[in-house]
Length: 129
Image (cartoon, rainbow, N blue to C red; front, side, top):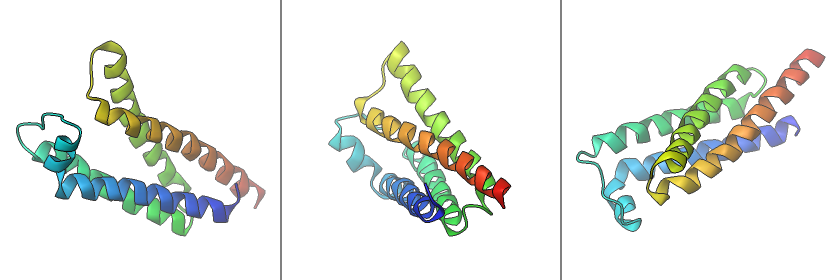
């Protein structure tokens, strides 16, 4: 994956997390209703993580601007994806979790694999320079 493709990929990662964050910030009750899932007793439990997704989206856009310079930020994106995937897959395997969360965990797993791949590729590129 060349640097131009990496830039496009991180723009897509930023859009993905940003759109999800905005949706859960502005319309959490509608999203829960769409999946027929009982929302938590206070929307702040949903809106705070939504704001965190928006912050991570901003970070992904920053990575897209200069992937080599901002390579270290990719590890924070990896930590985000590991955190979410591990929680969803753990609860799916050991008890229950509403199905609405599972497709996003699979998407995040794909992002995680590509984050690791791009982090390694950018490291090799930096060593070559």
